[in-house]
Image (cartoon, rainbow, N blue to C red; front, side, top):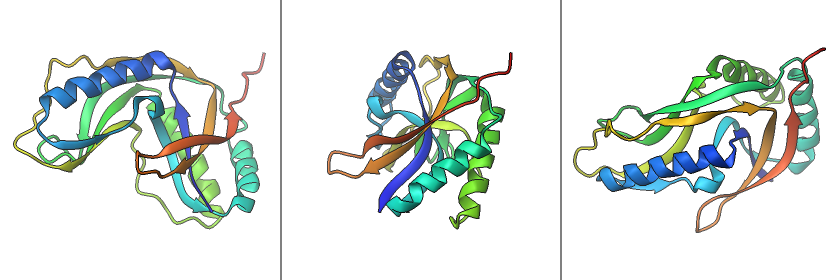
Length: 186
C-alpha cells in the first residue's frame, strides 16, 4: 500500500518566500506548531491515503484523461490565514489569490475520477498551501499584519502524484507520476 496524494509543486523562489513567512510566524506566534519542511511545500489537490500499488497506473491514466483539455495556468500565492480562524488556529496557510477557480476545476475532475474508483468523498476543497499545523495553543496568536504575504506567481504545467512516507523526522514525498497539462492549440 502506498500513501498517495495529487498536488502541485512550486518553484524554489516561492518556497523560499513561504519559508521566510514561516520563520516570521515562528518568531511571533506563541503556539506549538509543526512546520512543513520548506523543501516539501506544495498544494494538495486530493489526498488518497493508503492505495494498493496495482491501482496506481489505472488511476493516473483516468486522471490524465479527465484533464485532457486543461491547459497550463497561472497561480499567485499570497495572504496568510488559519483554519478555522486566527483565534483558534489549527492550520496556518498561504492563500491562492489567482488561479483558485482553475484549481477548483482540476480538483473536481480528480475528485470525480477517485470517487468513481471507490474512494469516499473528500471535504470541500479550499485551495491553500499549508505552512504549519498547530499542536498546542498557547496564549493569544493574532496574525501579525506586517509579515510580507506576496509570495509570487508561477505557471502550473503539471500535476504530481506523490507518495508520502511517514518517518520520525516528518513525511518524505516522492513523485510517483507527473501529469502534464495540455498544450494550448495553435
